[in-house]
Amino acid sequence: MDPVIRIKNISYTYPDAPGPALNDVSLDIWPGTFVAVLGSNGSGKSTLAKHLNAILLPAAGKVLVDGMDTIDEGSLLPIRRRVGMVFQNPDNQIVANVVEDDVAFAPENLGVEPGEIRRRVDAALRQVGMYELRLHAPHLLSGGQKQRVAIAGILAMDPQVLVLDEPTAMLDPQGRREVIDTVEALCRDRGITVVLITHHMDEAARADRIVVMDKGRVVMDGAPREIFPQAEALRALRLDVPDTTELLRRLNAAGMRLPADALTAEDCAALIGEALG
Image (cartoon, rainbow, N blue to C red; front, side, top):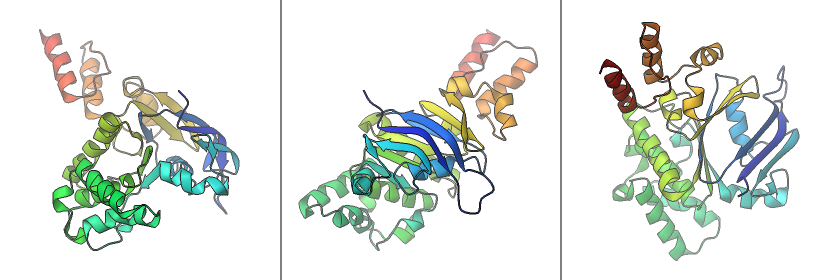
């Protein structure tokens, strides 16, 4: 199986910036995986996200989507059909006055025939749990509901990859849960490849793989159970760890001997219960 996205030694510098936002970054992203990208402000994670569907083009190196080079203008439309982007503020992606019309907007502009648009819109809204609100006005929805509508609009394009650039940054805890539950289900149940840019450690803990960036480079890459126990290294990068990881660290500092790789509250409780016997 080939990577759905192959990033080969890419670099990128914004005009008038003192240094590169990306510096010789290489990554392979495999079909059906859930990848979380972490990094402090200015680490390059959002710049990387924008290279995945050719919003930005590398100054050096290549980004290949299903073997298509993002720098090839003739491949732009098929690349953007395969890789959908969801951004921080859902209001910036909502363009219609009715939920189902908003979800239909992208496939209509792609020239999809009306019967297929109807099928895609209904399917996408069901996948994000918003079908019952399909006739509502988007501006009356909660932040989490708006973001799920934005995700449905991308799903209606039938993408292989969903790239989300800090999609929960503007949401309350309930909205965050709604969005991340939806995103994880799309990956696990539908096999959509997910690349999640986030600064929330509990969101990253649900991924298959974590990529940590600093100063435009990839500095850590592995499963959450491999990355989060490296608490001191993460703190040196101005990042935190999940609450469960921090609890286990404090208990071990107090004299217990617990594995440091439990990520869920249930796993953490089971470890502590077993230790207390």
